View 1 (cartoon, rainbow, N blue to C red):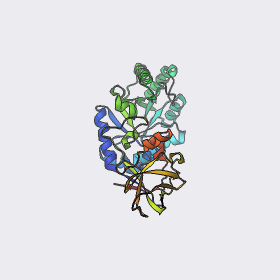
View 2 (tube, one colour; view 1 turned 135 degrees about the horizontal axis):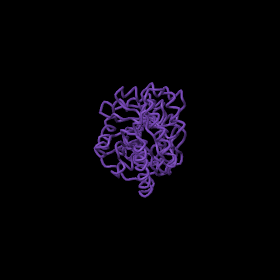
View 3 (cartoon, rainbow, N blue to C red; view 1 turned 120 degrees about the horizontal axis):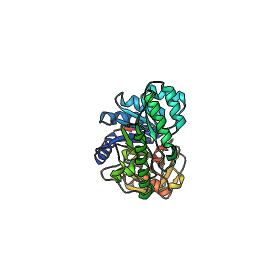
View 4 (cartoon, rainbow, N blue to C red; view 1 turned 60 degrees about the horizontal axis):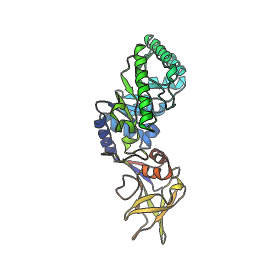
Length: 343
């Protein structure tokens, strides 16, 4: 296999610095779901923690446990997927703060915690319908959370939600619902430390969505939103590099190994970076592709399949836009069998 993904940790840290400065005084959370968007959670979290990042967001508990091990005991690790009581016990042992968007899940956590004052972030559904307590059920939910907090089983450290980021008008309605939910929770006696609503796009563009904490995922790795503008001061940290394995009269073949397959629909729509600059991809197979040749092409030449664009290659978001998806989907398709090389 000739492919490798080169990850510039310094670039990730530079992107983080841009984001932290932009959202200050709100705090910054580095989201590391899907193995840090394919960049490798262990190395990314260790570098970020050494750089002063103290919040990490992991969709599931196994990724949260890895983030905890890499970040050390002083970091705060947040995980929001609903899990079973045995998994709750694992999360509590790893000091992972759990996101709770369901009344029965809150009871499960309290039962496993049994006096340990487990920190939780309770979630209101502000309109995205991606988990979260419905507004009509919220008053009873927060009243019960206050009871469980008084008994020492949980500690409500956060109130949070997701927004759709489909239009300013929809997001404004979600923000208003979020503010109302905070007021109701405080009226019930809860005093959360952090309130967090926005992820990358809304928080980057709109200060009123930042509250106390912002969950930054794709932007932290230099991956802009599909259809969105380039991000000032932020650049992709990962480059997928393969090598030429055969040369024909008008095309060269590039072996990229075990990738779970770049989408074949990118053929004819995807440009890669070569020693002679940008070249069009003609065909994409399960483990190799044919691209337009160039003068002096040689077996072993490096070809950048995606990256920051310094050799004429596309970014993962540009590739995604060509086939109607998001950049995160392109990069997480890269198999863990492809070696990660860290700079």
